Length: 124
Image (cartoon, rainbow, N blue to C red; front, side, top):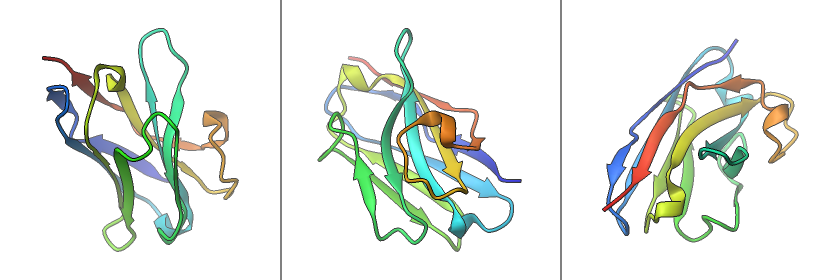
């Protein structure tokens, strides 16, 4: 059973940067596809980035492409999301998630393990 815990959220001004991280505890972290989702009030949960097991492949949603970077460190069992050029529309709770089925999906329903989420607020 994988346990995930996010950190690093907070308040940032428009145009600023923030990095959120997710620490994992449990077996075989390197076998999981990892993803970052976000959910704003009244909106559906959106997959903004996902990364394969060895970090050689990452994919982003159109809404964050070119601004966000996902990375993972399998030795430290962490996955991070560097967020740049933040805008008001990026305000949301950010979750990391893990899929042990290697389905390479943006559908939140296929991810078996979730962190508790961390709030990111973009405000002047």
